[in-house]
Image (tube, rainbow, N blue to C red; front, side):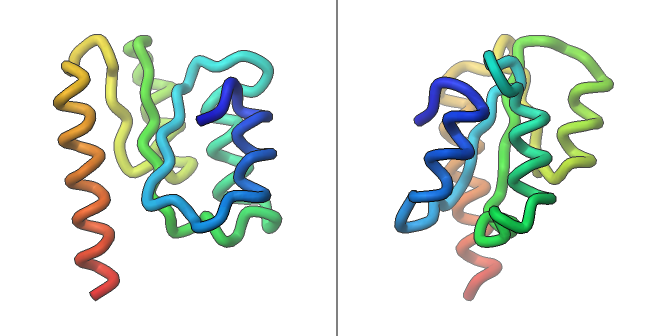
Length: 104
């Protein structure tokens, strides 16, 4: 876990083993989730994370933010206020299972 996008990027530099999935809230202090996602997907420093699925989360229903997160490489954007926590957990598990099936 990380407090903000900048903290997340710093933690990714030292994380081992690599995560199965990354969850990013769009609204974070210091560096928002969209800027963090852009760094993860476009900065060569984070090449090891390019194929790790990213789910963005938000409470704002902004079509622009959703489209931008998908364009930057998120596989899904979930609106937190429209999903129970257990639904989000279920979706995360589905994405991880799908990713593992692709690797087989």
